Image (cartoon, rainbow, N blue to C red; front, side, top):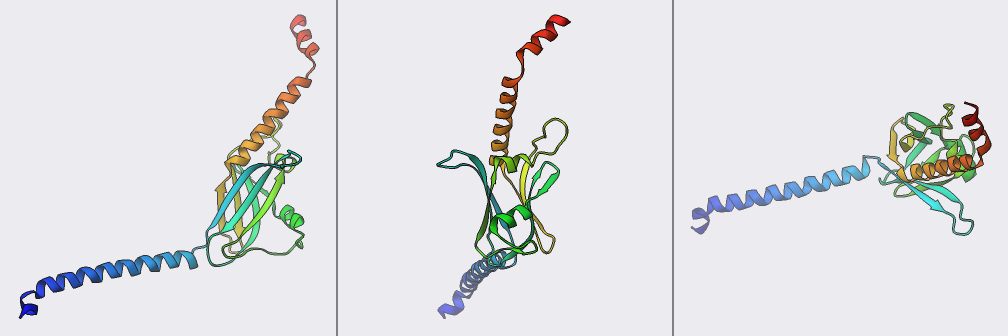
Length: 185
């Protein structure tokens, strides 16, 4: 009798519980799908200074957030629209063979450090000492997918170095030439 009188309420409550359980199941499904199917690399860059020698360098990290490994064909840095391939440099620093695949294992990362001189080679030669644009660290996997991330701290390091070199060049300029030009005009 009680069931017959409250059948509508019971059906409503059971329906709400079923919808909530379905929502939870879908949320878990999409969360697991993103872990297994979607390969996403995370890029981190630090403006670093050696503790002992006080030399500045860039510390770059490419992390694999998925539970599948990612084989990388090319690693590099884009300065504006110009890409600079760092794959050979990475392989030589890590002691890998020339044709060896770079594999970022699941839930792991790879690191590379670039000195100031290596970073200065990222400036395209345009007759003005190079132009510093937006810097992005990129990786291309074996399927041709491009992953990239901004590395603003490395851009700051490069701009500091460029500013210091320009100030040094201005300090070494001969002040007699500048005054001679004024008096000769």
